[in-house]
Image (tube, rainbow, N blue to C red; front, side, top):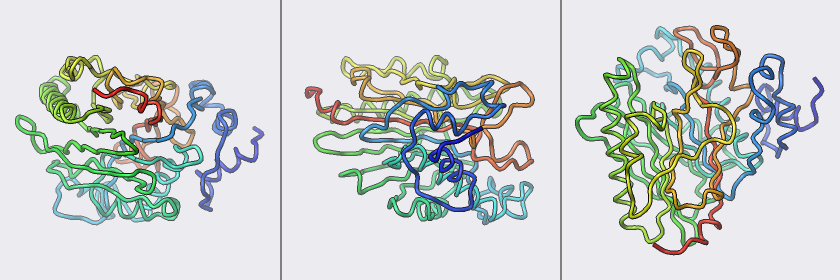
Length: 361
């Protein structure tokens, strides 16, 4: 396979030993650089290389699958993820994952790294300190936002922000209330530029561990609480620009998502922004599922927001059990595979100038 200069640079960025800043790469070059025999049969070039142009603002959502700090601490959930633990989560493996994640963040910006990187399954602030200070990300001056939650495994929602690219950033964490307990918090971030404020709610709902039916009512309670928090923000904004993004552990049509589907904000409602490429971000028993989602107020001009799945060859591997491809995860069971995650990232491109054309509410 013959690669262009940009294609070679792209592969160096992911596989090489030298860390280079990302360069702008066209969709055609990206498709060429990631094509291979085992991937081309399962994912078209159009899917691999999203045609979406970077917006004035770029946001990434990524479930990074058990990103633990290798030191053991008082959290029982991290015992396996230490150098002496069952998974042998060594400092070398940890550093490799941070480097790969930093490269994905750079690549997602298509020449200009994203203003906000929302993450879930992050253990603590030490991980975020290491990631934001990584030599690949250091030149972009990311700062992080995080607060320890009561999650029984020590997994949290967090984000990185390029503060120099956004005029004002405010944030808070909103713990879920009973019957929901011992899970990660909801994070609310307000990003301002000019006269506009975008309110983003970052969500990682309870998993289906223990059975989808057994946990469904708890996830439904969570989505009802998310809708209530969104309504509280809507009530105080003159120009309501509200979004929810995250791993909902269910598709939009599921029973658990009904409170968000039925929620009304004045005369407005939420609508899912479907990725322009790909079939989902998570694959389970051969089936792709869109459990990572972006919901926005329906009245927002949909042309001002574009969502795409980041489909890159280093994030994918052959699915030997069910055919096709799947995300290349860090571990399968207790076997180390060297990938980043069992999820794929979502990239959200936003054009604030189009929002500004809307009248006040």
